Image 1: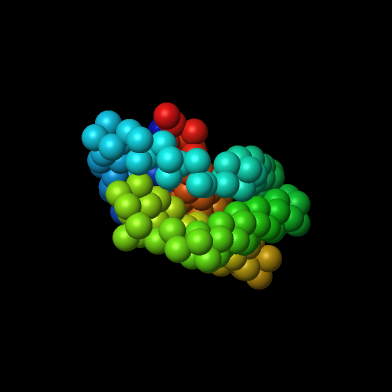
Image 2: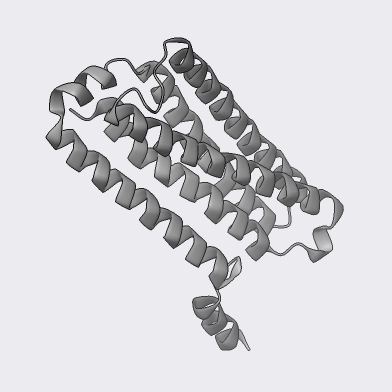
Length: 192
């Protein structure tokens, strides 16, 4: 019986194969956009350098720390749930959600400042990429927050029907958001 379970986990990862197909498609999409960004940087190095200097690296750095920390909290939530500690698991999911909300608030402030300074998607090629990459990522963070809110609700209200694999699937989506930001942050804010 244990062998069948191990074999089925290889072929049916947490969240199901569809979730992992979605994650891979999203990573490929972001990867193609990043490659296009890097190629465009080579074509217009001065423009990209000057535009990059207008970004708020402090907000970007804080958001990076916030997402990495929230990813840690999500991993802790899964580990606690697997030891039948629903209460602490729920606490760590809430901390993950707080991290996502802080990220969203800081990104909103950054967007407000860009709009106020008329640095929009049609300003130049750099800002076209900036808005596409960061807005697309933010949409994923918001979807992740919805998924985590549902997962937390299920843990608190339906623990008997919520499997560790369900929570791992939620965590996988959240970690995808972390990974994508860890790729976006250096190329937008630091790369020269």
